[in-house]
Length: 96
Image (cartoon, rainbow, N blue to C red; front, side):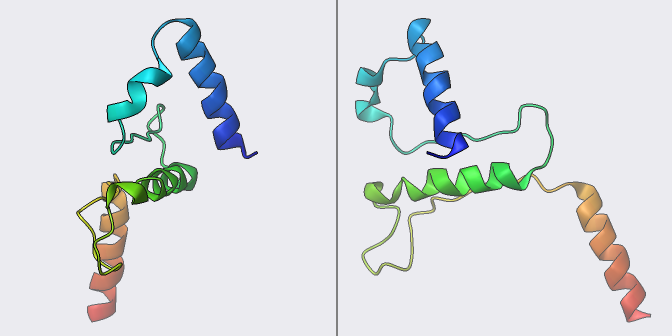
């Protein structure tokens, strides 16, 4: 079992113990996921977890009948402005 699932199960037990989470409420809760870095750092692992969350939405019809298009299900990333500045500087210097 991978670390992500182990951590999820551990956290789920804590929430259940404190009466914050009840699995019986899951009947109408599919379709929304939130994966975030609590310390605000940018990590590939966070993006990979987001992709895993998207994969489990397949049953909701996130893929159209043609098997290629979708209903807009996706992932939102926060890309640091410095990334764009570096790319812009690199492109600008190549055009001179």
